[in-house]
Length: 383
Image (cartoon, rainbow, N blue to C red; front, side):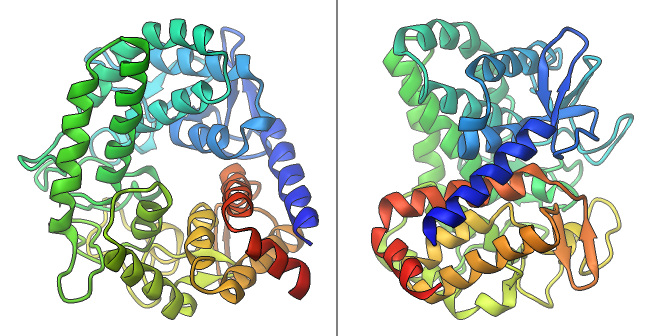
């Protein structure tokens, strides 16, 4: 059963990635969010997820070219784009071109760093080193522009908010931010490693920045429940995606705190999961403040996304094989019978052929197979 599921998700991911390719004005092959190349641009975070979770389907030379294309179309001050169009226009905030939703997205550079790191993991060490030395000044500049509060968390000014993490880029989370600080922390850890390994840039700077996030993130924890809020200002609400991602990327959490989150995810499974896909907030809850109007139960204000399913699977499997198997079976069944949508809900589907819906589930499953072989045995025996 595992081999069948893995093969299906690998083939689906590969087909969607192949279908999403679109050639830019200079000949660069870009990778758009949907598997029929309907979009006219490459989003940095979507491509980063593809490279990290299903990089086997992307030629190495394309990843290099896409990184260069993204850097080349940075803003004058060094802020990296949210997306870059086929005709070479860098767009920095969510929303239609010329009608941005808030200030430039806070996660643009972190996701570019993740793509660079995914490339590092698959390349010849010496060859990658020459590329990193070329790119490091631009990556460092992009990270340096991300606003931080005095404690070191990524900060969103309530008077002039940025569009935050791209899969909540319509949500007006303000003050110190949770998911965005995790993304920044992870990027800093990667930059520390690469700077030290290749004697380029300032690794100690990134060690200090990541340490500050580790020391400050507790401000976002609800002391009465042990759960984490999405933000300290507007949208001070329990962040399901953020908590699952925090554990998935190995952010340092004491064992007791980790157990609280894992127990919460298991005990509230039916309150955030539908067709194996994941709500940002518990069922019945909606974001307190948005950057644009979104109807409840749609899109980022109540729909369910497979983007986060791989992280949730990895969390569930540590506590309850049956829940993890249920989510895995239902999300693949949905993909087979209905399609790989950006998000779904009852009587609601948005954007068919969403690439990262498939790639992120595939990446989570492959990781689980390596770390929890007993779960694979369980799948073989029960499904």
